[in-house]
Image (cartoon, rainbow, N blue to C red):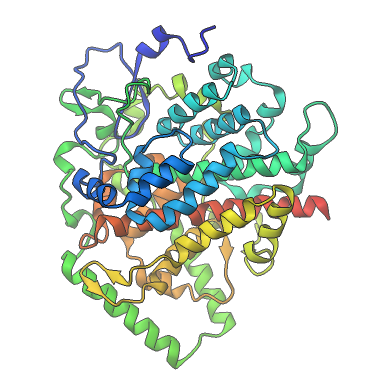
Length: 492
């Protein structure tokens, strides 16, 4: 078989939608046009990203030093709005993919493909198909999981759980993978694989949340075009994100005028700060507020933006199985609210019982040397990153807001911080932002431009990219905490 990947005739039958990046059938009577947006993102004006890249020589240096593709791809261009963070991100990703580690290079890229496929993220799949082949991967594996060694196939269960319901991972899942036999995983190999899976699940959230466009590089096979039917993209209709809706009317989300929205947020931050200084809530009250926030997250569904065109109406046109489902098993398995599973008495993950700083970091560093330091630097960087601005305001302490975003993601994954007042989440994150966060974190493939436009309308795009970086890292850390806790329990 040709080492360049799947056969040209098969690839010619499909194209990629630039909106939802699902693979679409090409054999219908459709008119192919150029994408509606240019530049690295469908959500962010091209000039804003280009300006950031032209003035910052540091970005070019980082790409030369740490990019595995050797070029400034669209993800890197958007992340370069925050160069400090970009350095941490590229260094840790380069280490996972290229430096000494337990796993062979082609396996690392194949695991990245399996992880991206859980969210139908063709952008990342295309990127790592190319990298897989360049590092000597066997082209036949790209036909699907039935062509790969059994030990790689055995990662399916943990890939599925990590991506959608990490709280279900137990030490039994770990024992099954590391048990003796020809297809077993050593613990260092498994930790490397888990880090890659969590990294690429979270990166898929960033890709969809930031509207990353397919690459225009001619070497990348089919990521160039939109498929409109009767002047609309099928996926636009399915996502209620058609051209006419591109300029959002705030009434759909019940949003007040964007300027007063900003002032109201500033006022709430100030009031919370004063209340915190006046009196501290009791431990019992803190627990109640967490449970309330966890239950309320049940009612934050991205479904309220999907009312006009049910996705099922378009299933014939969305050929997810062609290029994506071949890399996963049980494609129907997805996120299910942690709180809803209360009937099964799933205990809340108390962060104090198993923290990244005291437990996860040392375990991951022991089994896969140095990755712990790189991940820790990345988590700290995004959490502490600030320019002390909020939209048009300067000299603002945004710590409270960053913590609310990070902790809300962990709340949806059932992780609770005893010393955090979850009442702040409700005060600081209004509904349209919660809808956006839950969609990007839990089912990123459903994210639309409309959702991105609906919150913080007075803020800069770079600030919204910072939100996406926080969501990505909070999600990755949540997945790692559950997986590393299960490995710790296996060891004890």
